[in-house]
Each structure stands twice: as structure tokens, then as C-alpha cells.
Length: 626
Picture 1: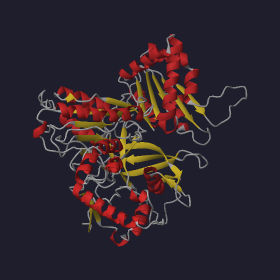
Picture 2: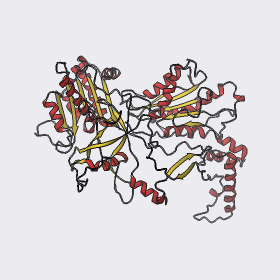
Picture 3: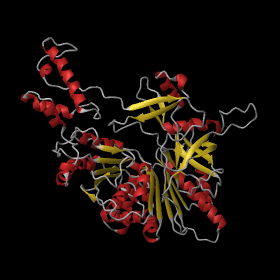
Picture 4: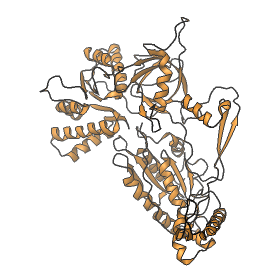
């Protein structure tokens, strides 16, 4: 539930790797851009077309059980502390309890974990893989790094990558049997100087330019050198022409030994095949969980037409599937590309008459491209209902994402998934202004594809008597609607049970425009399900001028600091935070630190340790996104 962030690639420092070193292996899970940075740095140090070897989804084509080359792992972490979906098969394989303790005794590796300290389980994806590799006998050739997106990935990523080359050099030099290994890695500048000698005064320029080659590293060096020689011959013919123009230069530029990079070769094979007429496959998206095709039974606009953001609630009919959930769970929604944009692209490619054909893409075997067209990723959404209250139904809430294009003329664009959803549910949107009732029939329910998300801890406590604090401004209130529905049904079924207090801190811009679930929340509050409802409106003026403004949820939390400190520290209460990670969640966390520091009488460091303990005990839970 977070967005990716690219670290700025550092400039590769030169290091002399032994000329008889095998290829290193790079496995990355979730952050392809950083993997490309490592590959680029290694590529500048090698003229061997097979290295470094890289795998975007784990060791499918390489057998770590037999490989002796060093391994570099780059892995991110999901909002629930799990490795990303692309790493799940790999993690499942190495978690096999039947594997002996020396299974990876031959393996040497370095690992870079990527995470965000705003989340409960920081860099846990990397920590899980790191710990298991150690248990199976693997050893580090380079210390593990943990990069924090909260303060800036580059603070750890850049020095870690810089230090990687020196660690690899040390590992290669100290490895036994180097002379028997196949020749793979030498510096590009050395190869250039040996195979294509130039004047002594130009050696420095030649070596620097060679490190900046833009040609595809999958080509043989002899081909590149041959092309460069042709380029130099063509340039030499122009030196005699001393008049500069748009196509010619004059000395000293024309006399410099500059290698003009050749065009990279094709690396994709594309074939069009007539569709066999079968239903569209969901293989175009990444999902290792079962996919369910379910109808949309209802859609409701929760905001007024003049609200800054348009928020919709969608109800799915899951009664005819095996899909199950509990309040606090999230699920993946699989969306296609926009039909209009696909049609526009087909017209530009002059393929309109072949719209129904299947497109088969295959990466050429000898390619060294590290980044390919990524699969369209599923979008995660929080469940906004309880199956006790709505059996056979699943609710979720979303804002329609809108932004201005960077094209001329500027037009208003919608997000890929939310824009598609908004258009899809128009026929069932209440009030229904789009569906035709001329025939007296019912509009055909649109279908969407969903899959479950596992390993979520954002659930109600097992003991219903403990107090609960919920913080969810905007659409962050969604999972708490499910909590309240669930608690209401439990109290109806078991009226003699003791139930703890439930606090909700909700916030929005305007009370009359985007107060989501207003009637439902008032119902829960009136009937004692929700014992405390604290609402803040960031853009509305206070009722009285002398009244202190309560603009955000953290302001309301601060006003009730004594009660909340008692609930968390003396009554074993739980606190749940759902919504924006970069601003709201961070501000709420800072407010909690201040409250604990003030009410307990400790410094902020000790207060932060107390919060960390709550996270470890899973009593401070977050479902947040950027």
C-alpha cells in the first residue's frame, strides 16, 4: 500500500576486479530501479556480456544450490511487513523446514532491504530473507543495509552501493580457485585500450568515454569496437573541412577520439496471433492468490458534487465465491488499461484492425536489458464492511484520483484504477442517472476481478473487553466501519459480554461536503457501539471565534491526551491508524510521542521506545499508504 521511490544512482567508482571472476547474481524484489543501478555499476566494470546476471522475481533461472558466484539481493517490504508478492515464491521455497542447515553453506551474499519506518515492521521483508539465508548456512560477503523511505532511501542506498564494489573486489581476490574460473569481468577501459589502441595523449579521454557507452551490453565487444572504428573513420573524413556547420565540427572537437555509440539492438520479440475467442485471461497482472470474478451490486457517492474529491462506496457480491474476509482485511483489485487509451495507441501503431489479436511478447535470449515493461499491478483496498452485517457482500471505498496532464493542451486525467472504476460503476451508481429503464429491465451488473491479501494483522483484538482507539481521516475510516459493524453484531448476539470503549478520530475538509459515513457513525454513537466520536474539519471555520480550531485528527488526539494515555498504558488498549503515511500518520505518531512524554514524565526518546514496544506487541497498528 505504498508508492515506490527511486534513489538517485551514484556514479560508479573504479575498482580493479580480477580478470578471471565469474558473474555476480542479482535478485531484486519490488524495486527494479535500484536493481538497474547495481547492474549499471557492475556493467561499467565488465566487458563480459553474461554478467551481471539479474532476475526480477527471484532465482527461477539460477539454482542457488549449486551456484558459487556472489549473490546481491534487493528487497522491499509491504505495508504489513511482508516481502512483496514477487518474493513470495522464493521465501516459501527457502522456508521449507526440510532443508538442511548447510543447504546454502557455499553461498556468499549481500542484502539491501528497503522500507519505511512509518510502518510497523520496518524492512521486515529483507530481515526475513536475511535471517533464513543465515539459518541455511549462507554467509555475508558484505554487511546488510536497511534503507528508510521516511527519511530518504538515498541516505543508505548510495553509500551501500558504493561500498558494494570494494566488498566484491575483496571477495573475488580472496576466493579460492580464481584461475580455474571462466574469464568474465574486466574493466571496460582496459579492454578498449588493448583491442583498440589510441594515441597516448588520448588514453584518458578514451577510457572515460568507454565507461559511458550507451550501446546495449548484450552485444559482443568486437561488434561495438568495429562500429566505433567506422564512426571514427567517418569523423576523420570531416577533419579536413575546417568550416563548422550544423553537421560538422572543427578542431579540437573534431580531432578528439570520441566513440559515438551505436544504436542498441532489439531486445523484444513481438508476435500477433488471432484470438481463439476464449475469455480474457488475468495473466497480464501479477497475483499469486486465487482471482475471483464478482459483480458490482451497488455504488454510492459519499461526497457532494462540490467536494474537492469525489468518494464512492462500492458493494461487491461475493456470495457465489469462496472469497472470505474479516474487518480490517484488504484485498487486491485487478484493473485493465483504459479502453480509450488502448484504442488511441492502436491507431498510432496502425493496428486498429487487429485489436482482438493476442500480443505475445518475448525477451530475446541474448538481451542484457534490466528493465522491461512491468505488469499492471493489482491495487490494494481496505474492506469497509463486516460479513456479519453484510453476508455475501464486500464494501470498499475510494477517491477518484484526478490530475492535470503534462500534454498540450492540458486536460484533466484520472488515475488508471480509480478512473476505470468510476466509469464502470456509473450504471449502478445511486441515484442512477445513467442506466436506461426504457425496457423496464435491470441494468447488467458490471464485473470486476479481486484476489485476497494474506498475512494482515490489522484486526480487532481477540479480547472484546479491551479499549480501542481508531484514527482514520478521509477514506482511512473505511476499515473502522467494518470494525463498528462487526462490534454491533457481536453485541446483538452476545449482549452479556463486556465490551471495551471504542474511540474514533475522523477528519475531513468540510462537514457538509465530505463527511463520509456521517449517518452511520451517528447511528453507532447513538446506540453506544461507538463510545467516543471526535470529528475535525480542516477547512471549516470554528463555530465561535474564541474557540480554538481543531483542524486535524492529531489536534483532537492532543485534546484528549490524558484519557488516551490511560487507555494505552494502563488498560492495555489498542490504537489503529489508517490513511495517509507521509503527513497524517507521521503527525499522529509525533503527537503520541508528545502525549506519552508529557503524561508519563519521560523524555521523547523514552516515549518513542514506549511506542515501539506497543508496535512489537501489535497494539499500535497501521494501515497507511503514500
